[in-house]
Length: 214
Image: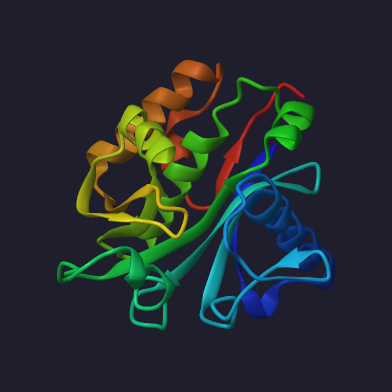
């Protein structure tokens, strides 16, 4: 089974904490070369605290993908680090989550699930299912141009609130991903078209579990 579930920062085991923050360092610092803080081979910052929850996609006990989510009523990156990317950001009224440090480990996907497994779509769907289960109106995130293209193709209904420039002088987009039934259905249908023998009803559940061929 490939399972996607949530863990609060305070409940992270030492082993999972080490694995997760080392994966983040490998992806965000080493591969993407973001301006992130790293310590002893791990990437973490001031937003990794008791207000943070983490969505993990896990296969055979190994983290395959993940993202950090923080309720917008708490201190978050949009109020802090990302504010320099945009001018005069106005967040719509509502109950929102912030999603940051979204990643998929391609090597682990290839090893444990197969290169063609739609892990990114699964993580998008997990965000929507979590938001709906906990009565959030949507998910706020900052996306690069390549990620924006992936999101558009996924079928997720997103609104671009603002376009800005990152510290790498590249365009970035402040997005509101809607937690609406149409987006949930579009992602569910796209996943089912790529993964045979999935129980469609289970794809609206939280947490998420997927039958896998491996």
